[in-house]
Amino acid sequence: MATFRQSWGKWGFGPALVFPTATSPALGQGKWQAGPAVALICTSIKNLTFGGVAQNPISFAGSSSRASVNTLLITPTLTYTLPHAWFVGYSDFDWTFDWENGGAATIPLGIQIGKVFKIGKVPVSLSIEGANNVVRPSDAPEWLACVELTLIFKTVRPPC
Image (cartoon, rainbow, N blue to C red; front, side, top):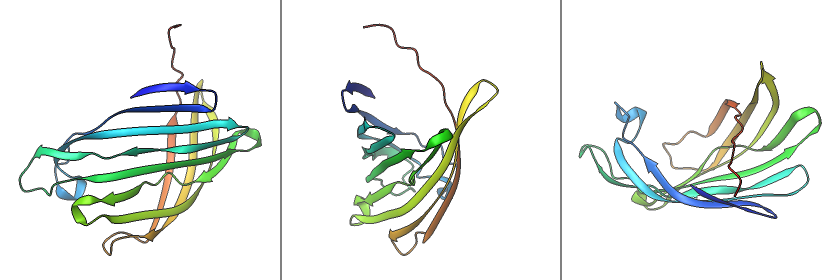
């Protein structure tokens, strides 16, 4: 993804690519997919980060026994940083709109709470989150829960 810094945060665009690595229909879609992706993250308000990522991968090849895919995924971000490296915000669950199924939507509303700390010298983020799918197809779960552990690595950029 190409990203661009602004006084208010960052934005970017690039491809969304999905590879058919699932060995069973229960584990994934089994289709090669490509489509556009865009991101916008605002960090200009102290202790607040908000924005989102939108991507729409569309299947173009893969097992003929698997269904075609054309799904818009939106990952909203809203996080407030608290004292002592704690944070709280909107859950990380994707909003989905399945264009192959008449635009069927899944929209979870939830909360996330976590803390950033170090394991040895490596910073990590650990959080728990839960959400209710307030809009969902009949075969989607009503509730979602997640424990998330993220290793944080600094990137080194050459001077421009």
